[in-house]
Length: 283
Image (cartoon, rainbow, N blue to C red):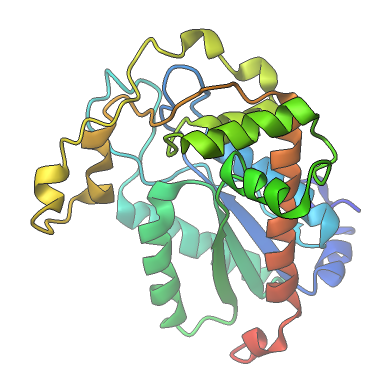
């Protein structure tokens, strides 16, 4: 069935409201540099796509994308194309959107976060919104990329052929990444796999290596004395907004499998959140 809010009419929106038991999910991401080889919209594109696939497994109403996220505002010339909003604006905008969703009858709201830099402010949002005595409940979920490590572990546990999209060569590539314990973090193998599963035409493997993704360790001096910086000093450690290694490149088969497995994880979270009546106690 159609699960996307924007694709319904006033007459048909009650159909997904009933099927989802009044549960709505908001894909949240950001617009920021992902090295030179991946789109600026990687995080929100991935969040939006996987959430929609999840909604076809477990009915939930999919709200339009929340594209803004917490992104460092420094060095705009180097990080051309990145967008950021003040934290107060993010918190206010998300609360007002949740209020509007509730006014339309959806009393359970799930935030799907596709950007690691959002974790801190979304956690604060959950604490704050819970103290405001709203007539709805909010929860959040962040799902890490399946490739390469989770998929490699799945193959080791369940055997060759357990991920049907993959060839033996694909399995060998994933196991190689695990054996090498490849650097993983941003614009990395995992995010590249997701993009290959959605929009392979947007990947620019030819630009890999134009800028360094090597860990600088420039924040080690602060971490050594337990001095907390924004995002743990990540922006110092990886100044080119690229943290990853590619001993092999993920292909479309690996990408499609990674996206499917991520959607299934989201669907499991949707089902628990949607069906657990204890989470409706305050409504």
